[in-house]
Length: 365
Image (cartoon, rainbow, N blue to C red):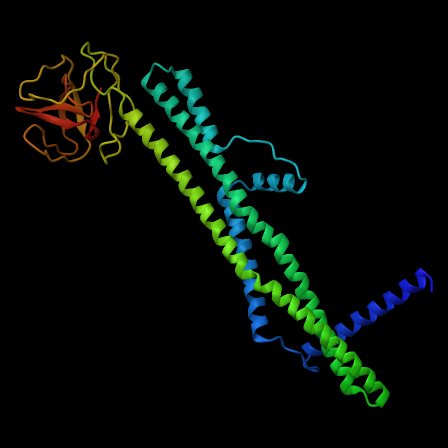
């Protein structure tokens, strides 16, 4: 027998097996043939594997969206990954915003309050961008890669063996059908022999599939460890961002907020104070030196010559006799006092005088 004859016979046998399975499957769907049911344990394992596959894919895809919201960037990274090439490094959104802020602050002038603040904010945004890049790299390595390996590796093997089990089951049921239809003794003996062979092959494939499926529990345990790594990476990222912003807030809040004694006063954009929960405050800039000490005698302060009107943004109840209670929208006179904390000004309303928090004021020109 030459190779060509062997190949022709093999193709004919394969075609016959395929036709037999197709007939069996069709008759089962039409209710004209019996179907061998898998045992309950194996069915549960198959259901668990399918459920694991579906949710792993959903979690993996949504994590990719979380880490990289730009769909075009995700597609580009996918193409480079399939080509086994490293994707070109691209600037992320926080880094781009940070660079814009730094460039703007440099053009406005680092010596100005706004320019200096922009540069500080830009540097912080770039640090956040670096932290974001580290989060993506760590999460991809410790979380996304194991999930993808399961989908593209372990589950593909399970799906392959499951398909083989389905084919062996169809062969078994087809053999049972032929045995039932066999009438001649010779034909019946041949059908019984075929049934024993197909039953053995089915049992062996069912055992192989069961062993693979029981590994799903180990997969869950592995994915749990990966999930912990992902949570830890997020926790590190958010802690870094919080610390960066906290440091930035302190830097912005430390800008001098008193008047020049020579009346060279400049109004700047509102800057939140680290010691207040009120947002939307205003501050003043100064290039003169100031030694900050605890006020020892607010009833007879040594004042600078500059004074100014300010509109009250929110109601404020004085905590003690050294402070002045405020009503929203009223206009009072304020001035700085040597030795007073930079977050406070001296306020004056008629004969009443006392400390007022600068974050509650809008300084008027």
